[in-house]
Length: 488
Image (tube, rainbow, N blue to C red; front, side):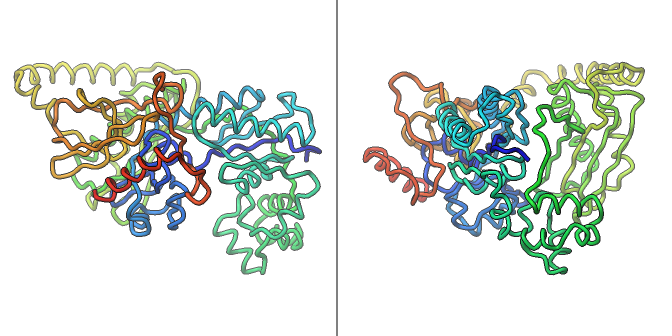
């Protein structure tokens, strides 16, 4: 344990939802839910306005819609979230060489390694400056926790939400943790909590009073000893700058169970290609290919095949994934598929399998080329005119009206709200889904892309009761926007 609170934990506030509110002026101050929008979707993040109604992360989207039917339900835009995350991580790296990212919106920082004096006043000043810099660089807010250990810093940042900073002074750990539920401690899930509950242990103080021997008897040596140390506020885990990934994978959940074997195979091939893209983006290769299949009855199974050496060849990984699929019965229906690669390495071993796969893929393309040419120009035009799937929240560009985002679609129509991060709430217009003037767009920068002289609006990440009052002109715009959205 450190004698000063020099470990910082940053957690962005309702990250995905706040980014969407910052990008879409008409949604500021309103409930926003980001995640899967289909009947089997799951909430990834809910804005604080939506949380008032009981909407939470990992909740089925169908349940969230019942709790908060008037919220904006949006598909995630990971391109935007990664851009914002990179800007935030760059600010963290300015504080210290030891930055341990946990996700796009969360990280530990060792301030001591960055030369910050081991004094409460000094680390608090660094934390406050970081919050200001994040707001300036991204338009979003984050909560900061400062303590002498990683576990405590994370607990502090949770207590600071939203948009706050909490410092846990060394020596006050047990007093602070004592009344908290045992689920506060890392590694205590529902099963462990139930085991402790049956033994009469409900709080962190009761966990510490039970003693190490009793916890080891209940939970096993490693888990029991570790839990006892954390109940006393002890956590000597260092901030690790590089966390080596053990695997890289992608998966999709389908709105309707897949029963067509050909479609299942095509989805596996598509997922294998996405997995290879992520693998190459990380500069890695792998030697074990894994597929994941979740059936209609929620039973889940995995199959794996270990290759002779690490590879990032798409042909090899696709063929291995298909071979694994052949051993799985999918006749009852498939609700989820996944493809992953483990046994990662930072080099690729070329082998005969890769050469054969590449040659076979080239042969298939050569055979397909004459067939495509025989279809003529009309076939090509028909393929281009095939209706796109306009998911709510996604970026679009119209030749006449400019940049906007999809507010909804159905029965051959798509509704678009035309606005930018630095504009007032925009107008809504409806088009045919195949309108040639409308095309998918790229996320606009939240900060830095604002034209000179354009209007700027503050993103809302707090409940309305805690948000500052907007100017009269902006208030009028928001009201009109709200009426327009409600009428939809």
